[in-house]
Image (cartoon, rainbow, N blue to C red; front, side, top):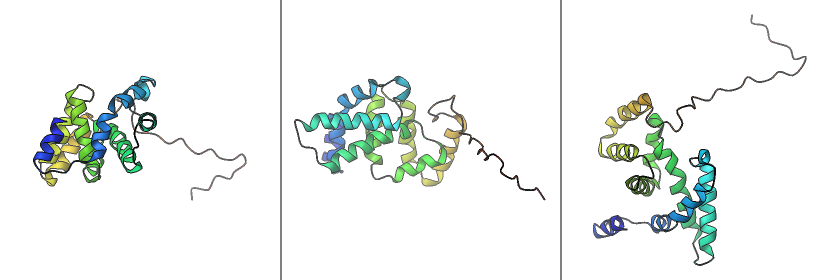
Length: 172
């Protein structure tokens, strides 16, 4: 909230969606942690938790859909911010909710709930020129610092099964 006060004082934009995300953080985190630990970074588990928390709050206060959808986006972006993948991650900088999601990541990292190194990386990426961002993303991909799960490599496609009696084309 202190950061929000500073943004208001500096005449910077503040979104009610971000404030709502902060107010619902406790119930959302509790719902996420109620699922098995291996699902904590899955988007579906996160979105289910947000939905559960918003429904619970709706019993006491009306939350317009534009704000609840925004909260969903902020929380859905957290795994992508915590585990960026190469240059593709840089597209997040253009996401309309990036700044609010980034601020949430920084707050979570300050509390030890997200990787501090990733919050610092996103801070640096925003401070450098666009030309410097590509090499930073390449270095992150090379070191594997942004990988969500080290035992998960690239996905391999399973070969298609042929129907019984299907003809194999000639190589000639």
